[in-house]
Length: 245
Image 1 (cartoon, rainbow, N blue to C red):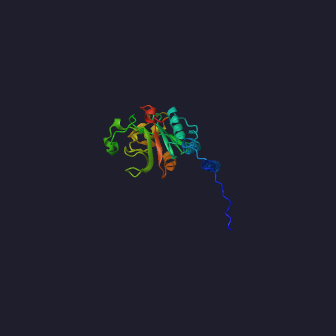
Image 2 (cartoon, rainbow, N blue to C red; image 1 turned 60 degrees about the vertical axis):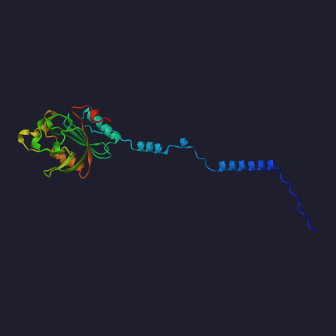
Image 3 (cartoon, one colour; image 1 turned 90 degrees about the vertical axis):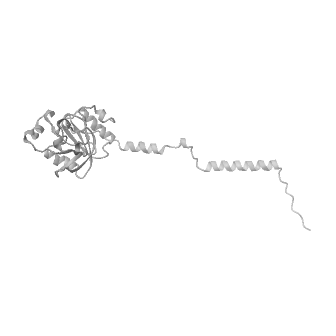
């Protein structure tokens, strides 16, 4: 005779639901303990800011070094700003102090390579006349013969006579080149040799450099390379031309 299996007494419906609820809570607790916690966005570590901070610290620069050369406070201030800000974008650069008629050439780390007196535009002023670079040189009036102030992306090239120069402001036809003896009455070499800058204003706007200095320092420093030329103002305040300082 077939004997039926013992009858299983199932718990009441309420007890069954309570058991299922407890089992769900227990499994949830286990998952919380096992799985990694994901923080809300506003509590996550600011990786971009941390990276930027680390990058800033890594690119902290040393002060500009004039190697004992005398320089005006404005020239020193500008050089220090270039060194600390990296405005030269890792390029060799030049600072022209028009009031002192003196050029300072620096490597990309703001260490002085050389300095020299120079000849400048005959007229005092910090701007170039619009379109002056396209006019015949004979048509340039005396009061228009200025060397403009500002920051210029410089590059080596050649002028209309085939001479190698460092272009400062190509559109205004302003370059840095060897001193030329075009008219002996101008006494350009003698002007460069005097100890004061009062007689160094003679050019049409270009920056005349002693021949040896141009060949040994300017031409070598910027051979096949771009650079930056900073020209200090002589009429305007420094911060008008370089507001970032």
